[in-house]
Amino acid sequence: MKKTLPWLTGVALVLGAGIVAAVTPAPEAQDGPFLIHGAAGQPIVARDLIVQVGEARFSDRITVDDDDWRADGNWLIVNLSAAAPETEVDAALRLVELVVDGREFIASEQPSTSLVGTGLRVGTDTEGMVAFELPDDLSAGDAEIRLSTAYSTPNLDDVIVVPLELDGLPRGHSVEIAEPSIEGAP
Amino acid sequence: MIDLRGARDRVRVTAAHGIRSVFSRRATPAWITLGSLVAAAAVLIAVGAFDTAENEPAAVAIGEEVRLPTYAVTVLDVEVTEAVEDQFLEAEEGESLVLVTLRLENLSDATISVDGTSDGISSHLVNSSSPLLDLSGVAVTGSARYWRDVTSSRRPLLQPDVPAIVTIAWPVESADLDSDDLALEVHEADPQHGNIVVASTDVTWWQGVLVARIDLEAGR
Image (tube, rainbow over all chains, first blue to last red; front, top):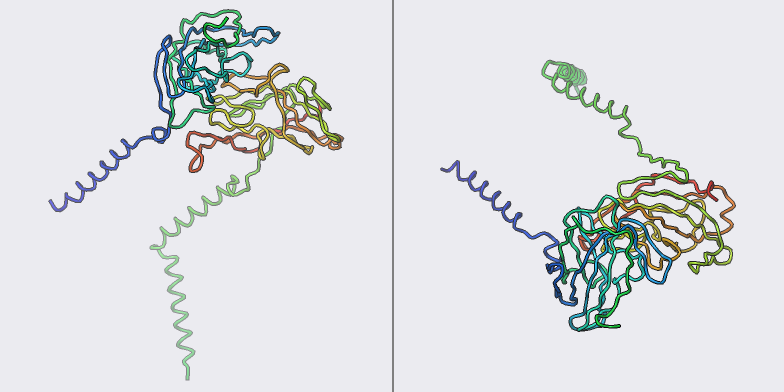
């Protein structure tokens, strides 16, 4: 018994250390964002943002109204409806990301009429569109759209997450990225 | 009186004993070990393991791609001018603008910008004390401006695996352009996560080794 006791104690200590290491939260869990999960077609409420993800489709070209500008590529266009829950101060959708296939795509800065950066209202939805420029071979898979009012993924603040199935989304030749509009406005 | 003869004999006996010990059978393992170490050192010296590392950047022509683990760059066009009207950009007195049009491809897993930070990733392709893309052969006098096309008003984002055509304008001393050694130096990116002061989710692309020098003279 005297000989086996040190061995048993050693094994117990090693197992204990392994359990502590396994249950210790990752650094992201300590200062990462609070993910607010929702579904397309439903309003999702976060601390400083209310969003509803609408129709999504692929296009080979995007354009904007009243301009000769156009951009060819493999574009994913998503309709969004957003509002500010409590205050209009600093209320804007600033970071819209598409996470798919282990890659993170930020909504393109190219179309000048993108909803990104548009000021939001309290109690009134602002409807608009965002466009993601994707590699030519990316048109299928399980994706996630992540939305927040911060310029970068925030620490210890809300990020809205909406799953999006890319398989089977319709593809058009050209889509015009419409100016953001206030719901009900002429 | 000191017995010199006795001391000399003791030294002689000790030396003889030492020499016999060194060449005795018991010393064989030590000789094998020493021989192995000498042989290993000789091999390492022969293959250049102790030589100072030297990195010779590749000479690349306009139109040829430099492909690195994190990004790829191809120079498409070079122009020296005094102003770019579409971008409301004008060179100062005694300066010129070197416009380099590039095909840039972000080979990482997240969107980056040409300079500054995009969702926690600082890429520093230009406008840094140690940029990944740097002009050589001229004195750069200020920050570089860059744009995707004449209609884009926002800073271009480089999406993962999506090539983009970007023009970068560097203000330089006009007098330096008389020399024939204008080139674009391409450095490898060394992405490092934040540790203590910077959050671990933040990534900075630090300047790595100089891997290529693209001769811009042919395009002027």
